[in-house]
Length: 110
Figure 1 (tube, rainbow, N blue to C red):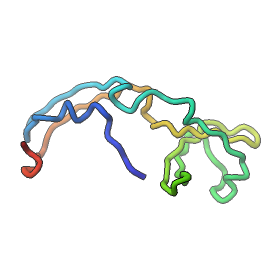
Figure 2: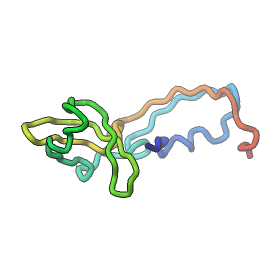
Figure 3: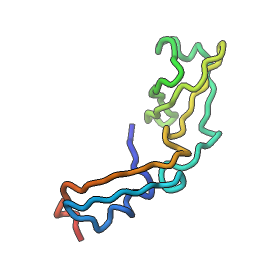
């Protein structure tokens, strides 16, 4: 699983030096995007036999068609149908940052 940083984070960090402090907020478009209904998938309970009983809110890893792993959040369990949300858990939310730069890698400074 690959973790990704919010899209707008880097622009707020450029030029900061060790000891600098800043705080800011990123709206959904600049952070993790808005939720996409295309990333809500429905599975049969039979597909979860080896994983045990799915719990609402649990994050599970699923294998994508290309073999990579994707985290999905169990949103609903209704009879034989299980709803899984593959949107980033923070999609659609404003994300707030309070940052103190502890160190800057000299090799990365311009």
